[in-house]
Image 1: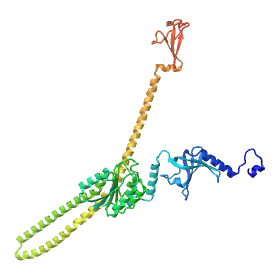
Image 2 (image 1 turned 120 degrees about the vertical axis):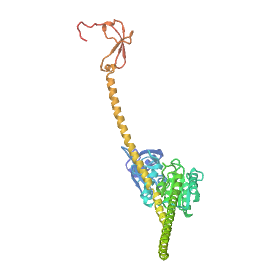
Image 3 (image 1 turned 180 degrees about the horizontal axis):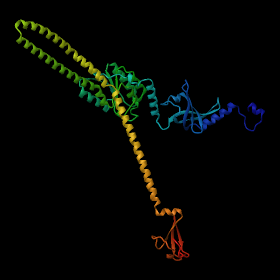
Image 4 (image 1 turned 90 degrees about the vertical axis):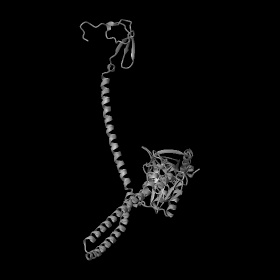
Amino acid sequence: MSDAQAEFPFAAPVYTVSQLLAEVSTALSAGWRRVAVAGQACEVRRYPSGHVYFSLKDETGKLPSVLWRSDAIRLPFELEEGMDVVVTGTLCLYAARGQFQIQVSGVQPIGVGAMQIALEQLKRKLAAEGLFDADRKRAVPALPRRVGIVTSLQGAAIRDILNVLKRRHPDLWVTIFPARVQGEGAVEQLVEGLRALARLGCDVVVLARGGGSAEDLAAFNDERLARAFAASPVPTISAIGHETDWTLVDFVADLRAPTPSAAAELVVGAREEISRRVSHALRSLGQLSRRRLAEARDRLSAATRAESLVRFRYLLLRRRDRFEAARDALAEKIAERPRLYAERLRRAAAGLSSPDRLLGIDARRARVERRAEALLQVARRKAAAARSRFEGEAGRLRALDPLAILSRGYAVVYRESAPVAPLTDAAKSAPGERLRIRLARGEIRATVDETVPKPEGESR
């Protein structure tokens, strides 16, 4: 018995504050070991200890909540202000403040999956760090000597890439790092493959896999792989899934290919264009050289026939000097032209491999989507107008319905012996005859007691 109970003899026991709070907390924990509560997260506060304090609220109530660090680190996403969630946990009483609260062990977003929220949060984080910026992306080499590929040896992606490379550039040196592309350990193997191929001296590294579900592509949305791509010392190309599949790696890579086959085309496409242009330039230089030499020989022959021997020798020496000077100048130009053409073609190839062209495609797609939305709005307005006209016509048809008058208190009378033709004259019925009276809602069966004929001269 407490001192207060000894001094004041109450019928009920007298508790100290701590005793009462302890008993209430025990009762809450025992009776509400696990409860699920839906609400909107507000007043979210994170402490250096790793604990997260917040409140769950709805239209009329608010429930203080705490998420201990050991449970918070298991969440795949960060709890944010205003997020609609369902939490699971245990009800308890915080004795130090006498505050009722729920100790949360799990949080599930409402409407959007936890993995999707985590991906969006990670995307915003990496974008804020500048990993998606266009000015940090490097141009893929126009004439790579060695290409590295990180992918699974069992998938169709590696076969598609090798088929294109073999057909377009059979002499290209290709190094393949086999790795898992989904499931446990996939991220670690993909990161190791990227780093290993960079150490081997590859000029460009392609990360590839075929299409799949969001779960299948989860490894390519991992923060570790995205940061490894951003830190790669060599240019990178991502070729993940189909054209509509986008992962974090696509945003970080120096160049994104819509498919694995397209990645191979990007690797060797510039080489073919440069080879074609260089061949054209060499043919043009050869034709120019032959034409200049032919013109010089013609002029020399004409001079020999027209001048005397002395004059001929004098002119010959002069023309020989001029010819040799022209020959040396032409040789310099011939030697210089391939280098100039190669430099111009290198710059053109670098421009062709820029991701800015992909931005033009996105802009055209956005314009098409805007026009489609405008057409949809016009169709909706026309449908609404047609519906309004239809309802007006239906209303007019209902007004012409002969049975609609019954709703204003009138009735239609039939003989049971003649249920088709309505009875319009009392004189045509006789006492005792059975009648059916049709109302707006239902019918009445009646018997004629007497008939009252229409008085003479009475109007209809």
